[in-house]
Every structure is written in C-alpha cells, then in structure tokens.
Image (cartoon, rainbow, N blue to C red; front, side, top):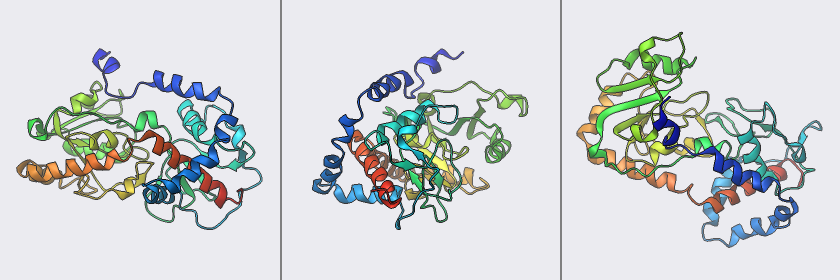
Length: 323
C-alpha cells in the first residue's frame, strides 16, 4: 500500500466531514426552519445579491410551475440507503432540513447523465439541451470540491501531462491510453487493477501533490464530470480536456476554452500540438492559470455557498407549486 497516498493524498478527509455533518443531523430541525425566511430575505440586502441570484437561476432553471406526482417522496423521508449513500444523504440533509418535511421532491443521487422527465434534484446534468428539470445542488462535495495551495510555479514544473484514473469501461479513457500511453510527453496510469487492459497501464495511485509537479494535468470526464477539475484549476498547473459534456455545482458549462483550461479535440489528435504551444508560450499558460484560480475562488465562501443552496431548494419548491 502507498502510505504516502493514504496519509497525504491531498484529498479531503472524510472523518471530519462525517463528524461535522452528523452533528447537525441530531439537532432539532426547528432550529434551522425558524431561521429560513430571514436567511432567504437577507439575500436582497447583500452587496452580492445579483451574483447570488444569477447562480440560483443557473442551477435551477425552472420557469413555470409544475406539480410533482403524488407518489413523490417527502423531504422527511430521506434516509441513508444502498441507493442514497452517506455523502448524498448528508449533503442533501444540510439543505432540506431547513424546510418542512411535508414538502415533496424527486431526488436522484449518484452520477446523473440524463435529464429527468419531472423536476428533480441532482448532482450532475448534461450541459447541452433543455436541462431545466435537472436542478443542481452541491452534492458529494467531500470528493468533488477539493482545492489546493500549489507551491510550485508553472515554470518549475515538468513539460509533461499526467493522468491517474480508473479506466474501467470508459471508452474515451481507453482511447486516450491507447493513443498516448507510450508518448514521451505523457505520464499516464490506470489505477484499477483489471486484467482487461494491458498490465503496463496499471500503476499505484498518485497524490495530488505528485500531479502538481507537471505543467499539465489531464481532466477526462468519467461517468459524468471529471472530479479532478476543481483542484487542477486551483493550482499552478493547467487542466487539459475536451469540451465538457456534463456539469455540477462547479458550473462546468460556464468554463471557457483556452481561458480557464486548454481545450483539445474529442479525438485527442491535437494533444502534442497544444502542449507544445503552451510550453513555448508560458505567459499565455499563466494567464489561463490566473483565470482558473479566479474562477474557483467564487466557491470559497462557505456561508454564501450554503445560502445559494437554500435559495435553489426554495425556488424548487416554489416552481413545483408547494410554496
């Protein structure tokens, strides 16, 4: 076992997350519900009210009222289960506990890659198409919302791109490995020990800090979004990826190619050309890093993040004719 990865991976520790959030589960809900209206009313008096409302309306695009089916689950019925894993239970609970348990919702936990037929609370949604029924909340955040303090400058990093991830049965990741595994500008590895793929692809996990030794970090979507994109964009390395197809609370659909990240073609055919361009033009790479760092900074205010979540849920209840 890689002890460095076990104790210093750079990822969020789940134990403090569980302790902090389970301590809120045992509190009486009226402590939250009695303060809800004041919380929501406070938005309009804030200097960043316009910004908050723009994010609320981005996550929740519902415009006309739609009633949920009678069979929809009550908020009070949310339970941890095989389908609703602990992180999905806790992250949802921290929002819905502020609302009366008799309200109803349609909650789809996990990696959601389709647009539901009825308004639903999800972690992820397709960027393209009419996705208004996919209402985003900040879910599974202990895994997805990781940010780093990078001590290395872009100029001090290796002129290579790194990827460590689960290839599994993801055709786009398999395709990338087949095309670039032996390329001199690439340091690639599959962290799943699976005999279906070439044994030389299999490597041990690398810490986030190991990744930060490279100028470029590959960010390939998995089932839905690429979970490493947030910490890459908070670093002094540059995310390299095709145009994203899915988005979460991170609003991947708002990212601009070659402004927040380096965009490569869907078939990856221009990878070497794009890497060489930014190696030869480091000033442009540093502009992307600056833009990316500024983008992630909007998620650092925990109180505001929670307030936006409450407003998203409140709008969901309004647009499902419950408030």
